[in-house]
Length: 148
Image: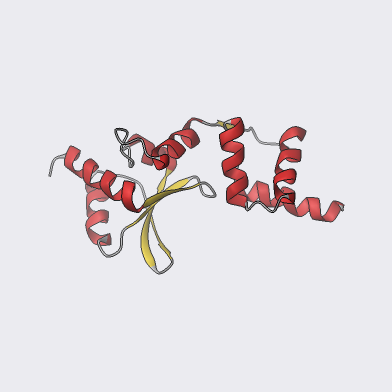
């Protein structure tokens, strides 16, 4: 099968049964009951992925950069999934070390509004074009609880 057909097949799967997981900075595809077929296609294209299970369904986990280069979501359809993936790929990353105080305050403010880690990650990405990691968000939220 030509590479373009494989990509179109994967894009159809991604646009219907895929999602961007900000917590892991990955794209996940639900592949049940066709997991073997999807794995064979990805293997034939030498695409890096991991296997997983979510809610008793087989999933393929792709690093967001790998998923964007394919691209796993159709750039012609430009779904919210495609936009979120591209926003994540193009977002700024903070260097190692403590976050700026304004970002810590923003994350704590969102946590105080009972936002989930995923909601906080998405809000920071959308408002500031910054990709932050879920473990760091959780750490700042835990620290906040100790300081009160």
